[in-house]
Length: 217
Length: 217
Image 1 (tube, rainbow over the protein chains, first blue to last red):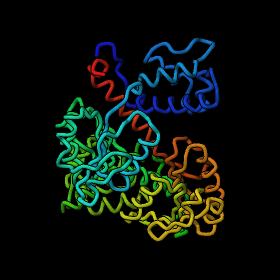
Image 2: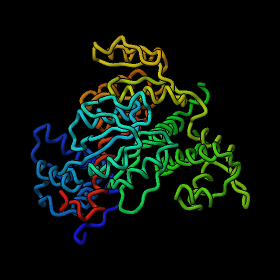
Image 3: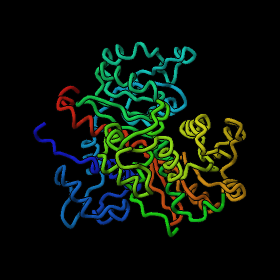
């Protein structure tokens, strides 16, 4: 691990955005971009962008800027997107199915090897050539198949138990959609998408943007 | 707006978490909680929690703590969750349907009044008693029905155009799932859920947690 830089959570959040904008520039055929141009698009300051990217190496040339293709590829490598991940989805309700289809259609390197549910009506179904299996087989499957990432789309009450099975089975990371902050040991990465928190933040912003809202209702 | 406190984005992100934990305490029948106990559960410091809550008023009593029911209700009010919102979902693919079902089943005060898509195969379908309409009617519908929030689940290429129609129609906020940072005028709240950014952050964390990962693949 010696040569890996310490990276703050804030940078981890910014890197995927850089990648997103660089991917957009690629689709537009843009070959070169300066930190000032990136700044205008993304909204971070140019010096912030230069500093972030310098954390990982020397990608730009003073007075020339960045080569879009090269920087995109470098950021992919930094983000660990230069490899594929073996994943399972646990909880194949609406959201689980949406996430399954999302990763399937976009071919983004997160390959869904297995689907799991507790509902006998769903177990045995096939979604995009993957069978839905019984949750009781989860840990064994994860271990046997060398699964890297578990995607949790079950309800709050069962999420920690599912996480424990995934961890026992040996996953390296968990993408959690259950509305709960999961406890994971060191060495397991955890990333949560709390949809209700996001919606409530929006609600707050609306309330505090619109002085009339109390009167209108 | 005079008596509304200026609130940082960081607090806006923390408030829904407070709400989530207080809701959990309610289901456990807990009546009273101290900032220290909240701190242990949520992971923020007790003084951070007291400071956050003090921004909005005097909810606790020194040496006694917070009444769970009362604080939950107050946070609901602060977050603007003491009212209902009229919403539309634009883009009724997998993710759009998942979000529609999510808001429908959980009865969380964000009522979906209309669904919109451009796909003739989907237009005219009904999902949870709501008909899927043609996107060409979006702006007119939003205006006529007094829609508060537009939920964007279309692809990146069409997202800004959809946002413009929603804004023209008069929405107060947009919940955006398209992988693009939308441009909205002042007075319109915008909250984005960038699923791919989240997944890429997870990938980064996995890569940087596991020194063996390069060798294993």
